[in-house]
Length: 449
Ligand code: ATP
Ligand code: MG
Image (cartoon, rainbow, N blue to C red; front, side, top):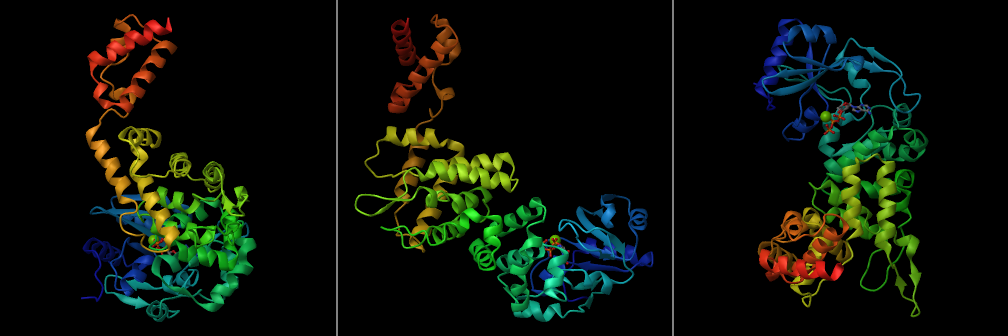
């Protein structure tokens, strides 16, 4: 019995390789996670079998990246990525390797990998650990260290510096000093990396416990100015009054406080005040003001997220949240005001906006905000939602068909009447009965014609 818990289906797959006299190793994040005492997330294998040989060994194999020697074995519900041992040529365009060459040994394969913690292999099925760069020791010390000369490894692939920073936030590891010092020098190469690869790393950063750790490393190494100069411009932008942090620290704290599993809210928290440096002005009393910063922030967020090639659905949701993030609730709001707020935000975005508000407040205090600061609004919104169902025109007790029967022609006139009826119901949901609304519609129609 080996010392790590390996999925039984993976062990079965490994035995099949052995029956064909091929070597097979568990590699990448799975070995790293097992050595850290965590469960493996996905099972990536490396083998000396060629892709066609793997295809011949198993019934269901998808040629996911034949050019790179990668196929995916589908086995008992698992998708097992299997890559033939290889070495990599240089990345002369900084984007992808120019040439791929198959290698003969696992040691050669491990030598192309980025960090010592990622250059471990576990031979299967017997579980013999191959660790030529003492990755185990670095994992124990929680250190991210390049395999070989950092500057050289970064010049081969400019994404590696960002991967180092991403892993630092994801694993709460520190970056070994030589590796860290090589990052600023590699930025011209990092600048050439395909933006989709950068965005994938940003997504992983935003899914980590404390994204601010990564953004602070990006700032310290100059990478923030490269990919998110608008964020860097928020450094030292002071805001007086109840704010104790500059705009950048406020955004980073807010981002950390947003729910980890909601990318949209994390992005909105990170960018919600991004327009503040552009609109900052002093009033007559010499106090900083940021009038209409939510509009400028929304536009800037759209530019930034488009540049990073986020899907349009993500961009739209983030920008909507930013555009409605400025509201000042107090208990003098009438139920009608709460209903109008819900309609303006949209029910679909409501929970996200409340999350953003909680994150924003956290980012203002730098710690758990005083109890009860946001709860009254949350409770109020939920109470109104539970009580009043008519929060969009289609929830009205009458529809276009009913109005047409009154002789109201379809088109702009009917549209205007429906809108008036909706306003009426927002003010007083008690009016949302067919009888009442038809009576009001009749009167409006007479007035309009
Ligand atoms: P996770 O899947 O949690 O992000 P991982 O370590 O599995 O972590 P992957 O991006 O899935 O990361 O890559 C798998 C392995 O491939 C890595 O562990 C590393 O050995 C190697 N690798 C990935 N990207 C690079 C790269 N840009 N340069 C060198 N080696 C890399
Ligand atoms: Mg992986």
